[in-house]
Amino acid sequence: MRTTYDEADDILVVHLSEKAIAKEVSQDWNTHVSYAEDGTIVEIVILDASKQGAWPLLRSHAA
Image 1 (tube, rainbow, N blue to C red):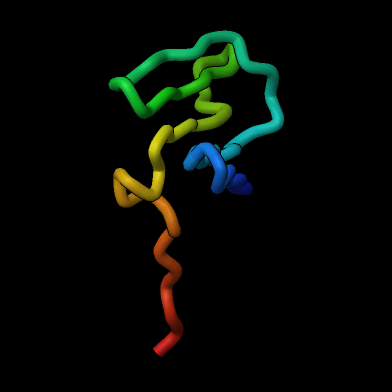
Image 2 (image 1 turned 90 degrees about the vertical axis):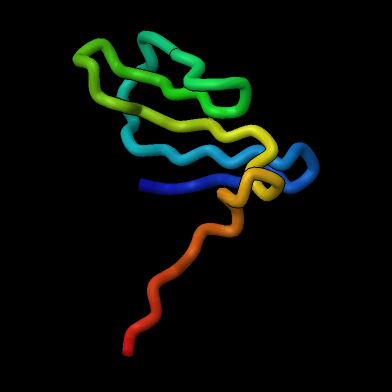
């Protein structure tokens, strides 16, 4: 998994797979999920990521 964030446009993309995208589905106006032919999720795109609280990602801290 890897993430990319476009600060200028406030877009977060969570890449879960390198498979080709076969279908994209909008969950709501700012969340879009892309699927591979086999039905697995390839990536998730979140528009207005920082405004929606999705960016920055929280990191766990070792105790």
